[in-house]
Image 1 (cartoon, rainbow, N blue to C red):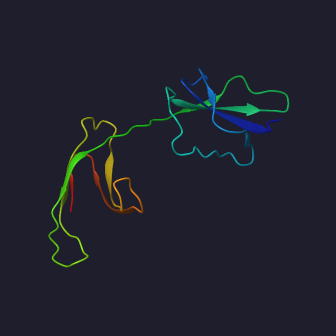
Image 2: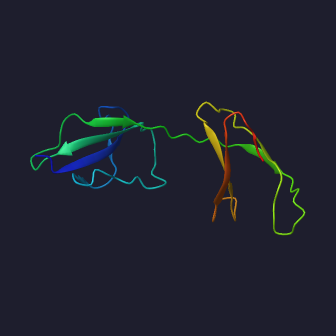
Image 3: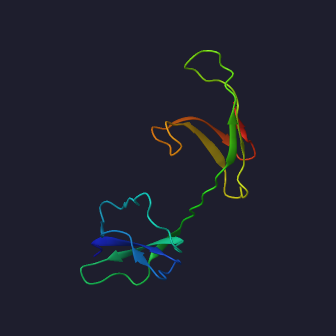
Length: 132
């Protein structure tokens, strides 16, 4: 009888060089939150083993994940709205060198360059490098 699930990061579907993510997951919950800033290292998969009161399963279930970042550059914005406290105009940017994994750009206004108190103001698809 399965009592818990054990979730690891792994370099393959079979649990190569696995690393335990957190404590065992109760069967009834079937959910584990991966905390922000979890180090990816060389891992490419999540592997999940069932566990009984006797032992852990020998063959895991697995799921590959993709963790990519694509930084754009040279953003420019000319405010064409004449009212104080309001913005209007077109935002332009240069795309990342590698856009193979980019599907959309999400655009936010924020109180800092690190995204403090951000609010999404729009989105656009890959291949379009501006937001009106």
